[in-house]
Image (tube, rainbow, N blue to C red):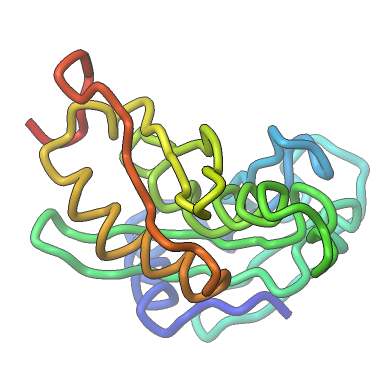
Length: 195
């Protein structure tokens, strides 16, 4: 069963209550599974009205149901949906560690393991603000050089995101990292999420 936190369940229940349809639930599927472009697609859903003959697994969560196509199930193992309230209203995150493929082995190159964490843990949160971060290089001193893009390039909070989120997460997984450095030219950012 896909984990949906209590805050996310309350958020979905409120959204579903506002819809003017009976038996409406949520539909979660994986687009481009097993590739670097894999993404979760979450939509309102009424059973039998998706136009597809594909069978679905149904999960009940309090006041609503979640429908998952059988073809997406294996990619959503250990998936978690959360909603965190903030000053702007809140942020919904879907973490599905398996949608882009298999986690690199513990003895894989450090760059491969860092890229995996960036793709499955860091970038899903940044994507909700139209941003992303990518690995540029790892120095001989194990300094991780990153570059922000999208809504994160030029964002005044990129440094906070780097120190409070990315740096802590990467060092938690990889204690051998000596520093996490942002080399983004934030002055040239054209569409930062926060101005």
